[in-house]
Each structure stands twice: as C-alpha cells, then as structure tokens.
Image (cartoon, rainbow, N blue to C red; front, side, top):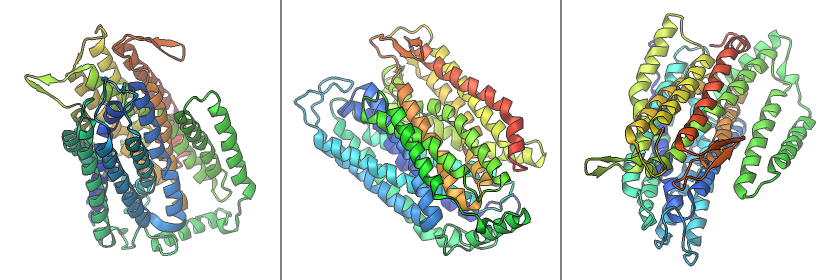
Length: 537
C-alpha cells in the first residue's frame, strides 16, 4: 500500500457514517422548529433540544463499554443503527398524529388542543435515537483508527476525510428533509415526511455496512477489525504488545487487580455530585443536566485510577481530559446552530432573495458544504506540514479552532449591532458566521478524534472515545441553557452570571468572549500538553 493511499475500509466507514449523519442532521434541522410549532415556547424548545443532544453524546459511554467488553464495534454499530431507525419512524408517527389547530405563533397552544399521543411518540422516538447513537457513534470512530498502524502519520488526514463523510450527509439532509418536512405553526404535520426520510437513510446506512464489513474492514496486516474481544486477532495482538511493554517496565498488567472500592467510590461520588447539581432544579431537564455533569466528572476519575495503567498511559489520558474541558467551550458555542441560531434565522433574519424566501432549515447546510469543500484541503495541508516536519501538534490545532469560533461570533455581533427589536439582519452575516465556524471545526473536531485514538490504550479505546463524546454531552446541555438567553422580539432583558443581555449583539458577544478566552488559555498550555503526550504527535 502506498504511504499516501488510504485503505478502502476508510471509504466504507465514510459512506456508512454519511448516511447515518444524513439521518441525524435531517431530524435535527426540523427538531426545534417542530417543537415550537406543535408543543412549546422558544425557551422550552431550546432546553429540550439541549437535553436531547446532551444525552446523544452521553450514551456513547455505554456503547463504548459494551463494545470493548462484549460485542465489538461491528455488532454495536448494527444494533445502534437499527434502534435509531426505529426512533426516526416514531418521530414520523408523532408528526402524523399531531393536532393541526395551533393557535399562536411560537408554540402558545390552545389549552383545549390535545397533542398527548404525538408528544408521547416523540419522546419515545428520542429515547431510541439517544440509545442507538450511543452504540453507533463511538464504535465507528474507533474503527477508523484501527485501519492504521499506531504511529501512522496518515491518521489526522484519515479522520479529516472521515469527517468529510459526516458532512456530506449533513449537507444533503437539511435540503431534502427540510424541503420535505419544514412545517409551520398552522400545519406542523408537514414535518412527518422529513422524519420519514431520515429513517430511510438510517436503514440504508446499516445495510451498506453489513454488506461490505467483512471485505474491507481490515488492518494493513489483513486482520479483521471490530470483532468481539474473544474473536479479535487485532485485540489479542495489541494486548500482547501492551503486555510486553509493561513487562519491560516491570509492571505486569495481568497481575494488577483493581479494588472493588474504586468502582463503588466513583458511583458514590457521582451520586453525591448529582444531589449537589440537582439543588434548585425546577424541571426534568435540570435533572438530566445534573446527571450528565455528575457522570462527566466521575467516569474520568474511574478510568484514570485503574491500577493497570502505566505512568505514560495516565499522562496521555490526562491530555484527553484536559482537551475535553476546552472542547466543552467550543461545542457549547458551536451547537447554537441547532437551537438559537435556527431560531435567529427563522425569526430575526431576512431570508428573501427577490421573490423567493430561503427555508430556515437550509442554513444548516452551510456548515457541511464548507466542510465537504475544505476538508480535503485541510487534510492535504496537515499532510504537507507533516512531510515538512512543521505540522502543529493536536492541541495547537484545537486552540486555532476555538479562536476561529470566537471570530465568527464577533462577525455576526457586528452584523446585528444597532438593529432594533423588530428589524431583521441580512442573511449574509449568518453565512459568514457558519463559514468561519466550519474552518474552526475542521481544526478541532477531526483532530480530536484522531488524538483520542492515538493516545488511548488499546483496551480502553472505545470507552475513552465515549469519554470524549461525553464532553460533547456536557457541551450540548450548556448550549441549551445558553440558547434560552436569545433575546425575543419583546425586548425582554435576560441575565447571565451577573451580565444583562438585552439585544442580539450582546448575546453573540457572550460566545465570542467565552471561546476567545478558552483559546488563549489552551495556547498557553500547549508546551505542557506536548510533554504529557510522551512523543505522540
């Protein structure tokens, strides 16, 4: 195999993830609009969106653990995909039964209107989507890294190409699902065809994976990847190598046993933190937030206290943890795309070009089309810099991503400056924000996936990928809370950490300051993180 050619298995995973992301982003493009049209106010819809996306990124912990211990990646991906397909069709059923007698724009529903069946079907569908994603997402990302040798310099570019597959699906989804399904306050039942289309895409994703997995998902040495641990020749080879390294350092891992008190101590700690985070909770969403924050703190402690870990392994895992904290700042601002920025596009943006009005959902295709166009360029850039031995190491790339995120919010804050409560901003400011944010995303997200794969011990690869996605869970919960600060047309003042937000400019500058400060701190930590990575780039 040429040093610069990627294995065919990468492109199978590319297509599988592309179809699954079509399903996810097709539903996401419609979700908040559907909630507002059929059930809730803007603020309540944003909170539910945050809880949903937070749980979507929390359940990979469960899926990663079961894959590592019992099922393997392949079986977990197929199971997760089928459960997600069921979830999408339940969303379709919800929109089929929704009452079309909505009285007031913004979700103020006539109290005599009964949408109980639709609401039940919707929440049941969300549970299936959350659970299925937990089995699908961490395992397909782990398999990308397993196609390569541990030290293969092509990994960053491979994850960037894989990331492009994600965004091909994410680009097409809002255009198709949005066009088929975008409803309004007088007829929210229109959303059903968008959800149905998302379900069909999920079925196609699993079908493609099942048909070609045995032929293409192999290591450079021809070993099948993604099998259950008991059957995996690759797993046995990695464990043997780890065992030999441990013996060389006089740390025979097979003789190391962890005390059961470690597990129960972490469970007790998580329970106590849940109680503390739950103080003052007023809704079910608050308890979901408390659970996610508690697990986000307890599980990393459980992993890092494993007595079987060598000193170098603990140091590398520490890098994953530190970067995960900064990822929270990135995604809590970036994920406004599905909530506050969607509502901003719908209610505060002039979307007309001549006599045509651009559908709100189409704005969510800007990000993925930029990824599709620029991901190959970024992959070639990292490969070029690597060949010249001047490639920035992973945390530095991620700090650049945070700075670009801040810049995007500065741009749209400028575009909304001086607008009164009833005026609408030009859509081109929103285009500019999404473009800048996407370049930042390409500097952070695929690089993070590659970094986790390179730094993780083999036996904890899927679980630590789950920990990485857990930071996204905390991010999305925070994103939902922050989205409720979006000013409405009534000019209501909203408070956050002692600051008052009275207009759109102040709202967007909040994210610019948050991301910019995180970027500066991460840049300052880069020399320390480089030492902690122990030679891994």
